[in-house]
Image (cartoon, rainbow, N blue to C red):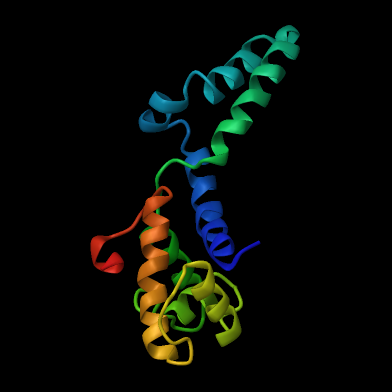
Length: 153
């Protein structure tokens, strides 16, 4: 998996369970009520109809592969609270990667820079790191993440 893919998976994967757990919320029911909750309610109400809902339950499993909007800031803030080390993920790509338990070495960051088509000097790690952080936040926003504007610019 790519470095960016690992970052996105770590964030959206942590953001997806709360969305699934809150599928009983009105917002989730509006978008997903015909799929997941209806299948669950049918299975609970009709034990004999279990084969039907099982088929219905299999189809919605394909839909959650694209998560609903994930509040990236909330996910990362909650992760930061659980860490003993103080990580400034809002400004540092290294700290962001550490927070997600990913390899934050210069080699990994150079690989990320290559994935994101960085055209600057990868030996100027300070400049590259600032660019990487903004690009990662922008990519998260482009792929369903709710990211504050100040983290993307």
